[in-house]
Each structure stands twice: as C-alpha cells, then as structure tokens.
Length: 89
Length: 368
Image 1 (cartoon, rainbow over the protein chains, first blue to last red):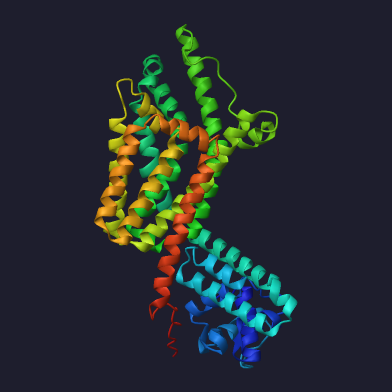
Image 2 (cartoon, chains in turn green, orange; image 1 turned 30 degrees about the vertical axis):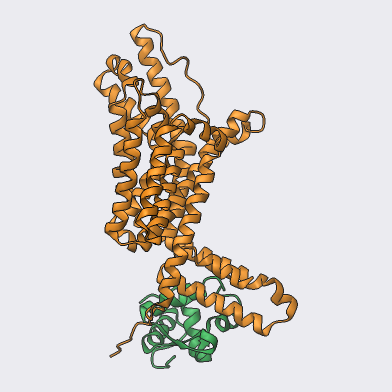
C-alpha cells in the first residue's frame, strides 16, 4: 500500500502522540496537515482502515491508528529508508 | 456566526463523508469558541476560514469523483440530440440546405449544434439529474461546479467560434450559388472575453455578456435543484413531477403557437429559453409546496391558475423577459433554483439528522 504524504504524516503523529482530535493533529504537524483537509483525509483513511475513531469531548471524534495503519506506516518508513526491517515503528 | 454558517451549510448537498468533515470542522470551531478570548470568539474568523477551506477541499474531491462518462452520455442524450433534431426540422435552414451538398449539410448542422445546445445544457442537466437512477451516487456539489464551468466555457468560447464558422460557411455556399444571402453579411461573433472588453462602451454587449455568463450559474443552480428533488423525493415521484412539468409546458407551447407560430418561437427560442427554465422551476417548486401541504384543493387550484394565466397572457412572457431580463434573467433564475434547492436540502438534512444512522459508522477492521 502506498501512503500519500498527508496520510503518512497523520499516521506518524497518531503513533507518536496516541489518540488525537483532528485539530490537535493540525497543530502538532506544524502546518504539514492543513486544517481544511484534515477531516477529508481522516475520513479517507478511515475508509481504508488505517485509522479508527471514537466519540470524545462534545461530539468531537478522537482518532487512533489501527494495526493495519501502523503496519502501513512501518512499510512506508522502510521503503523511504528511515527504518530498517526489524526495528519496528 | 457559527450557527448561521452551520444553517447555511445545511442547504448544501454533501455526501456522508463530506458532511462528516464539515460537522467535525464546526465542532472544532465550537471548541475554539469555548476556549478562546471574547474578541476572537466574536468574529470567528479562524473558524469560518477553516470551514471555507474544508469546503474547498470537499468541492475539489467531489469534482474529481464526478462520473464524466455518465455526464457526457447525459448531455448527449438530453441536449445534443434534441438540438440536432430541432435543427433538422427547422424550416429556416431549408433554403440553405437545398443549395448545400450532403457533406456541407452535415457540417452546417454540426456547426449550429453548439448554438442550439447552449441554452439546452442547463435544462438537460436538470432533467438528467432528476431522471437518472444513478443520481444518488453522483456528488451533486461537484457536478454543479463542473456543470457551471463547462457551460461557461461552452457558451463563452465554443458557441461563438462555431457560430462564426457557420456564418462563413453559409455565406460561401450562397456566394457559390450566385444568389444573395437572405441572412445579411456575416457579423463577428465575440467570445466572452471580447464581450467583456467591449461591455463598457456598448450596452448591448453588456446584455449579451450578462446572458452568457448567467448560463453557467443557471446550469449549476439547476443541477443543485435536480439533486435536491432526487434527495427529497423517491424516483417515481421525481419522475412524475418532471413529466407533469414537461407536459404542462408542452401543452402551453402547443396552445399558444397561433397561426404564425410566433409564440412558439418566442417561448422555445434561444432568447426565452432561460425564462422557460425559470417558469419550469417555479411550477415544479409550486407543485412541491402544494404536495407537501397535502391539500389537493390547493394543488389543483394553483396549477389551474398557473395554466390559465400562462395561456391567456402568452405575449406577456416577452414583456416579462424584457423587464426581468436585459440579459440578467439567467442570474435571477439561477438564484431561484439554488434557493429552492437549499430549502429542499435543508429539510432533507434535518430529517437525516433525526435518523439514528445519520453519523457514518467507522468501518470495522479485521486484521490477521
């Protein structure tokens, strides 16, 4: 599975920070994830099964990576040469 | 301000994924309002910019997801074929066709099709959206944007270029036959940018410019209206309404044709086509309102009054066009169509929200 840049950034943040709201992802990404596109991207990632969400504070949803998402991120990092096989995410 | 924006967004037709993205952006805005200083809260600039940006993302995504082969097939079926059929039966072309070779005749008809199709396109898209079984799977907002852009390009550049070419071709056929052309000398057909340049000096150019630019929002508005009708009503009901409206206008055209056929031309002619569409939109929305109130008496009285008024005052259509129009009629009609679509969408949206399955469930992951 090939991960677009925005999806890779979101997955990295979710793996590093744990469950997050969309707005937190925008802030933490330092503008690499745009505020206008974050929920469109998260919706697409949820359709692909890379992230999952649960109701949080005041109807907002908190997102966390699925096992498939974590494996996809690992594969993307290995492919990019950032991580060697066997090191984990 | 947030509640106003949210109410406005309820009028926009969005699919489940897009609606969820917008809803979450609005929830973020509410969260920011509750945690930010009063001055920031008052203006809500950051929140409204976020909603606007989300909306732009959604529109871009929907434009990509429009089924273009389906769109091309519908335009061919509902606009190009009727336009070609009308041209082939148009008596005004008969003298020219008599002089032209079969190949030249085909070229002439092909060059005139854009001119005829120009005003058919908004109506064709409306009919296609209402009629098609696939509409519920088509992203309506994206389709409306594509329809507007295509109509703009078509009426702005394709139609003037084809018209100009037709004039030159017809003129050369007349010259070869050694007769004088009954249509007069070939005039220059200005494209939309040329019209814009000459609009300041020439009020007539401004009128044409307003008309041509108005066809794009009219197409978009009618697509939104068609989508709202399909969202609000079941397929047979929507089709029944379309047939009823078409039957009504068909009867009107036949009954007002007169001996000379002047009114037939006036109502079906290119100049009055937007008014025809607007009247169609008004009748359809009138029928909806009456059907929603579930009062057959109101429905029958309203439709009878409309038919009577239209049949007794055929010449007033022209006056109405001149008053409303001055070229701006498509803009008015587009606004009416978009407003009716917004009302229908909002009512459908409030019904959807009451359903327990309104919020899209996250897909269940099976790993291993």
